[in-house]
Image (tube, rainbow, N blue to C red; front, side, top):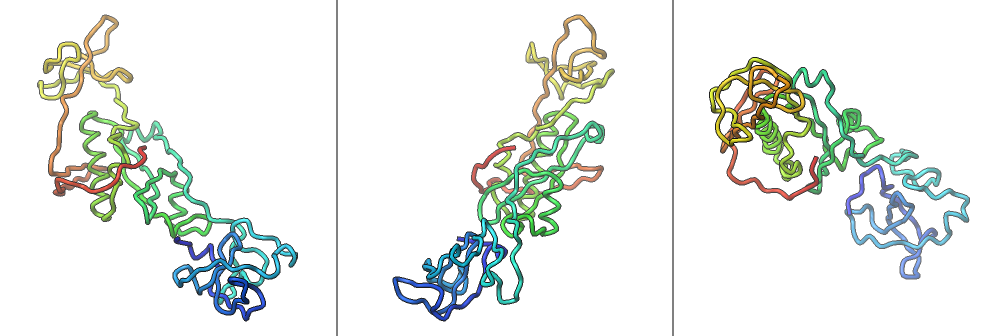
Length: 279
């Protein structure tokens, strides 16, 4: 089992007066975990790590057993005489950051995640938590989790937004040689997407189809703030048809435009990774 360095005290040594092992006095190196349990060996990476039996319970020594970190027992100090924090570092708490009206005007915002280093596990976090992991704050488990920041597109054509966000995630996964990040979104690449209202627009028949008839639509259209694209230059009270986008599929190539800059990169046909929790 992996233990962050901040959660164990090591290496320590006993001359036989503190512990027994198999009913025999134990002499040698040992280490202590965050719950106060003592094990043989210099560290978790130095087996055998046998649970040692303390001769005198902590309670008989008038020492408060630590809840998660070492507090007052002198043996909880390491070889550098550094004392453990009395507050346990926190694992990342899932937190959703919602885009603001200003973000929708800009058309994009930032999303933050924590990736567990030894598992295909991704957790969405807020900016403050992300910054703590960047700064290796002792209040968080930065040894176990790596912070991730990605750009997320909010407005435009739904099909294009889907493809851009998917490609952003895939590109990050490839550049950082990690697995499962793309699959963790469960294809929800238009999350937070919103149409911005507009009037007097024109389409050439390659962008939309009439939702009622299923046929490609060419002519004037407008975008309703809640209903999306609709037939006609302006919204009217009379009944008029909805438009749906003709899906654009991008194969074998990433084409991403973010904040006015663009770049392309070839992507392989197959990406490995497990199916994880979505966002």
